[in-house]
Length: 196
Image 1 (cartoon, helix red, strand yellow):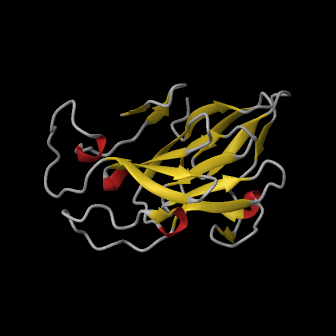
Image 2 (cartoon, one colour; image 1 turned 30 degrees about the vertical axis):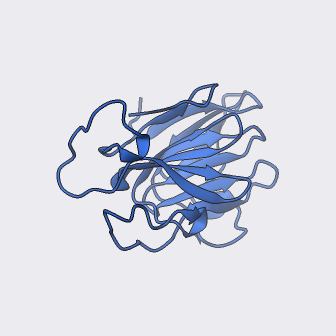
């Protein structure tokens, strides 16, 4: 397999979706490959732009919600985008905020509105049955949960730390765990979160 093709997903219409580096793509039932986002020249932050006209960075993962909308993680720009199934337009649902000052004792300083949060090399996405979106924010060593109804972001795993990563034990609260560049996440039917 070409290493630039990543992360297969099946949409509610039975289409096979995959991330192709700087553009998510669709493999339709007729075996045609159709780009549905990326490859354009419009700035990714431009409001209301058609997804196929947007210039994206490296797309590391995609996810599909219950309505058929596609979420793509743009690692280079530190963004999570939603591509609306009905209109084909893209919008930012998370990322783009300023890097908060580091404070090991105060915890994460950018919880709140997801579009104001700072994401550093986000690499993986997962949706639960309620269409909450989870993001592996790799370089910040944390997992974020975005409530797509309210647009609010909360950290659900990982703690700020400096220095070399050290395993700090099982059975501790997820928010106390020292994560080392999480790059894969999944959610099962009861809502348990798994990460790698």
